[in-house]
Length: 146
Image (tube, rainbow, N blue to C red; front, side, top):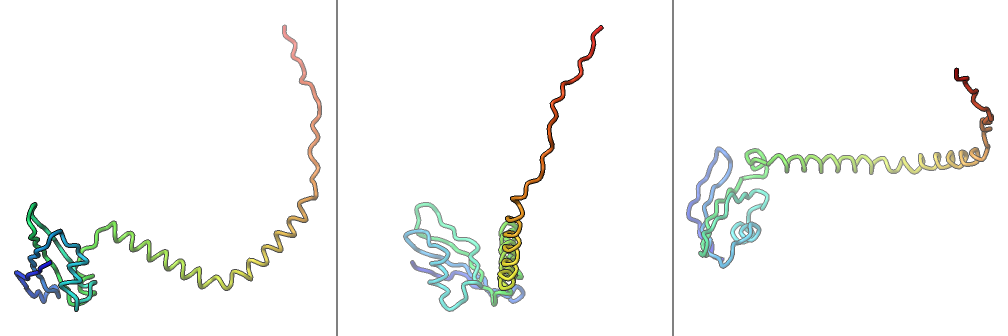
């Protein structure tokens, strides 16, 4: 895979560097391969590959890459789709709940022992039978037809 930088601009307002790359390869390179080969010294979390396009039958690909100065700058300016945002929020909530449960687990074994004793006492009380209501054999009164 051969990579050539065709355009490089620094954008201080958005705290990023905008690159246009021209890649020559036998097959379409993956985003991970491109990041590993071209941006070895940069943090992968600060790199966004906007597009990777190629024409049918050729081995040339054009790529637009944004390299942010920091992860905070990327989080500030990059749009995250609603689906992904919801999933991230759900995973954060689950992690927080697990932490709370993990903090409460030492207190639970003591609490668990007491209910088990109470359950055993209830089991002993259950054999006591309650008297059932007696069913009287009554015949319905017949109505006279006139």
